[in-house]
Length: 265
Image 1: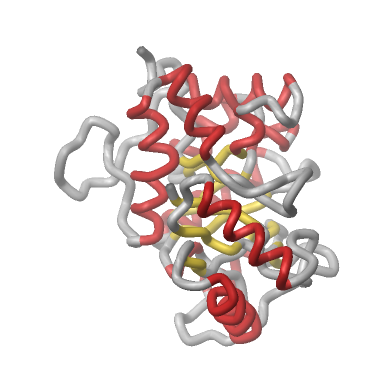
Image 2 (image 1 turned 90 degrees about the vertical axis):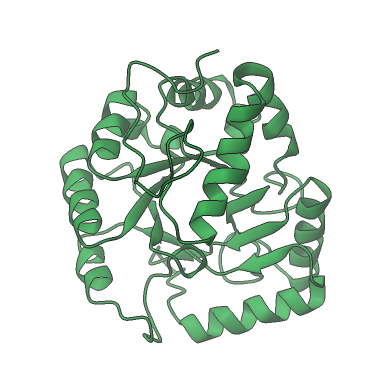
């Protein structure tokens, strides 16, 4: 499995607070079946700006050296959305020393929308990013009041967005409401990735095995593989997602309709 969203870089946001804790989080993730982790520190959020790319890369290399070869630790960021973000992304170059980080050096951007935002602003951002060749990924929509509605997510998906829900939402660890909202998004075919959003060893630990079991029990092994292996693998390979039933080809997957899940059994 591949975890696209976890706060494992030590001492730079509300995730791992020390190198030792970060190493243990990586080992816990590997023991639960993760072969790769994309480190996604908060970017552009309050005191956690974290836009010095060289510093983040050095910290990631230090963590990889301490952990060893497995799991692989890749770069990225959880990018807070504000009115200036679009201009920054459109102006980015590959050799920029500062700025928002895509997932694993790909064209996928993990975006954190706030409760103060709205659908119109998000739709404009998603559309413009998609037109520019980016693949915006909505982080944990089940935690954002106005985005937990499948109709809102469906609209953004129709414009080119993808959606990532949190593993512990699906397993019920964040309560019934988060579980119901995340499950409803899966049911309506609007979820493309499940990730841990791990922050520590106990309250929000790493690992995706329990999520795999929960997804497989409700929607089948194929659904678990798509959300935890195949689709995340496309991200780190910087490839477009393919339709769930496709065996080949490279066409971009069309958004699943909000009325019929691709995981219906």
